[in-house]
Image (cartoon, rainbow, N blue to C red):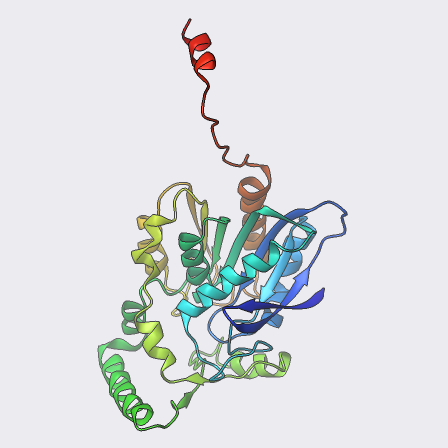
Amino acid sequence: MEHVTFNSLGTRCAGDLYLPPTREPVPGLVLGHSGVMVKEALAVFAPYFVRAGFAVLAIDYRTVGSSEGEPRGLDHPERQVEDFRSAVSYLQTRPEVRPERIGVWGVSIGGSVAAQAAVLDRRISCVVVQSPSMWNGWRYLERLMGRAGLHALRDELRQDWQRRYEGGQSARVPHLTLDHDSVKDAPDMSTRLFPTYRNEKTLDSVEHLLTFAPENLIHRLAPTPLLMIANGAWDPYHILEEAQSAFDRAGEPKRLEVLPYDVLGLYTGPGLDEAMTLAVDWFDLHLRRTPLAAVTPVPAYETVAAMTQ
């Protein structure tokens, strides 16, 4: 694994580049996490793809982890879309990577960020979304917090706006606040495991989440192949109805796999191998083995004449 940096619209971003042991150029993948989680956490997923012969670039978004950018911990999905695209541009400069065969993979909100990057950027030839969560930010947060909770949050955002208008800084709030027993220790564990992770973000990040609605564009993704791998058991954070709503709007080719695992099942639990096998197979089919679209040459008069005789 090689630590690399790449330019994302003027900001230095950090990545971990994993390369398979081969001398021939191979298809490449950009991997992105959710929110302000860091690239080191993607080391759980990257080896599956490397063993299958893909080059993998796991990235820190701007303001997160080892990447530059201020204010620290600004969770801005639209800018994260730009960081995915910048990572694609970087991969295309690497001689180990086939520049015409690059896909993206994202987990949780990182999956919808990856999908929107592929809508906007036709250099991205294939998409896999694992444990999808947010496809319409306003609706998602209302489902998660309830209408009363979202109303209270909007009051906080109004006060935060006034503070920023008067020259202050946005408040700092936890990135993850998980109440359920099975996941409540995850933020502390992440802080211990990943030294660059901070369980905090700017409060104004929530405004960017509220207005992020990639399901409104997902019908523009086709014909780029899309695989969604969703959690089918108890999971209040990766809401199945959110995934189904976006998937229904997407065009072909597409596939939705609902696996019988809970909130952690596709991260570190028993469903990880199954989910990653599905992802590897999807990339193998659509990124490695499917022929690239060919440009039809303009026919000469003699050619058409011969065909019509």
